[in-house]
Length: 206
Image (tube, rainbow, N blue to C red):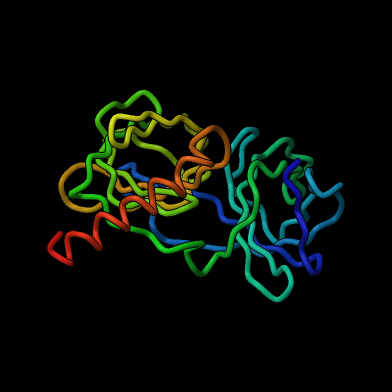
């Protein structure tokens, strides 16, 4: 069970919004709220002001945990009033202000990815907990997607949550993904270490 463990009842909500071109906005706007109830998995929030929320919408909640600012994806279960909402956390919390682990660039590696139904996504980097890919399909932050990663001919599958969205020039969107389920959870650290070894060998001229 995914647990929600804030230090206090003060919390912030991010509602992913599209930009002018229909893509998820890169701006992170946090809205103040208060935890009014819950069991550590589901929580009831009292919002400081009404927000454009819908049932089954993906959002992020931010809070302090052991003096660290955390980010956690959640899904709207019920709109109890204009300023009262019931959420369900959908993945573990991570640090909001820094990456969980060192990421290795993969542009010269033999790595292929499928994100959702889109084949042939370019993998930009990998870490022990996540990866970044370029894709043409539009996904909102907080979305959960099936992913398949093939490295050196060996496929690994898993479930990821979209942590960040960037729209650089060129028509494809950069997605920062965190792996939360599947055999890719165990395979990703091995892949990241192999990529790092390959990079060190190239730098040494071997």
